[in-house]
Amino acid sequence: MLALACAVGLAWWAASLLKHGVTAPRPFMLGLGTDWLKHAHGNGFPSSHASVAAAFAVTALLSPWPRPLRWALALAGALVCWSRIALGVHFPSDVAAAVLLGSLCALLSQIATRQLAVAWHHRTLARSLAAPVGPPS
Image (cartoon, rainbow, N blue to C red; front, side, top):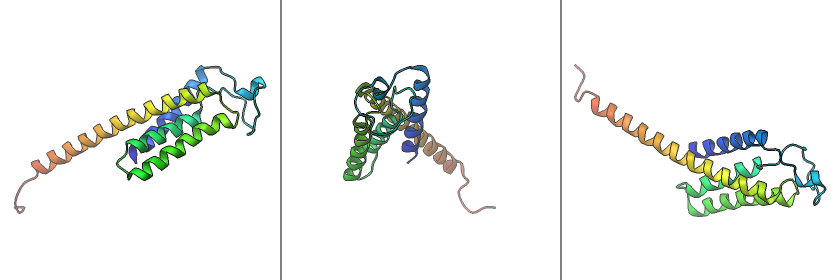
């Protein structure tokens, strides 16, 4: 669960940061397609929703959860990514970049949380080995 929270938070933060640095209109701002969902006119690259959904999906796939649950969560993430294009609020390139960003955030979170777990295990083991053996005197 920690890896999931870290991945989603990191993906949202990174996408928000990139949006401030990249000026990219959304399709409806250029008169392309139908704006099915009334959306703000801010920068569209990368899609924050798709970044978070991809981070969620990849973290689910890498988790030890039961396989049907992992695939169901990954499918939900993929549907969110697809919906951003279908609703006319993002170009496919916005979503593709977001999927790459979210996947990278998921992998980094997996690595970081596994290293944290190993460090915690070593610390706990060291404490138990350093504890006195026998009844207190």
